[in-house]
Length: 313
Image 1 (cartoon, rainbow, N blue to C red):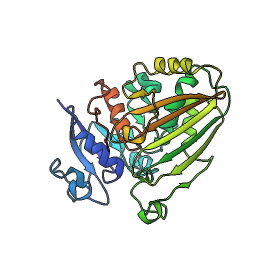
Image 2 (image 1 turned 90 degrees about the horizontal axis):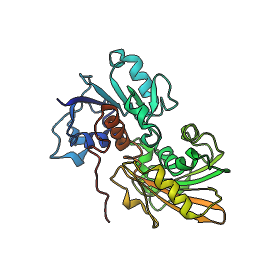
Image 3 (image 1 turned 60 degrees about the vertical axis):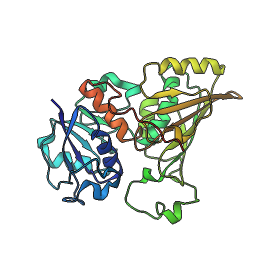
Image 4 (image 1 turned 135 degrees about the horizontal axis):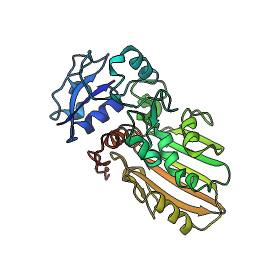
């Protein structure tokens, strides 16, 4: 018997991505896709990529579901759960930032960090996109207690990271052929990064990219040792990880766009370990990881419905 799933906030980018994944997942049945702004409209009027694959409509009311994906904006998940106590005992995967500090019974959903806790959880707080890329870059060092100094990060994200709501910095005419820094040293994902890595001093410069999707992060920190030793550490740490791969060659975003993969590349330079980390911000950084978490919660294969091919050109 298939598990009934509902989506709250199904009209946004993350709602559209989880919908695309769930339509082809063999173990789930979509019960309802809720949207306050698009209620009554065909799904394909908003998510036009699903034309021919989906004949469902957005609902303005809530239906029966065993699992809820909360894909509304930050602050909306807390409000939804407060206003709808009937869903308190459902399995929940929240894609907002509302519960990432693991409050109100939520478990932080980075599978490579705490898969066992996720598998036993009722409520999951899905990690942020920058936090996912940076934590995966540093987690093996943190777990081996080999972070020996400050951590420096520069990371660039695609325009979908800002969500669908337009702002001056997300208009095509501003974003195209342009780059900019924002929230330097003060990005909201620093809290959850510190929660996973254990508190090294982290200097983070985020960039807005002039492309649609993906994150490329370069992370460097003092390191005493040879590259081969670092490679052995990372290969051992991620030996059982379904989606994290180490590359012996330099990596680029097109290797991960449209997938749930995270690719890492290591280099050692003048006493520094440099880690390049790349993910698709809407998949491994959001909806793909959310489905990965659901698979763990339900005892299904972790990669079920997530073996997606990257774009080539």
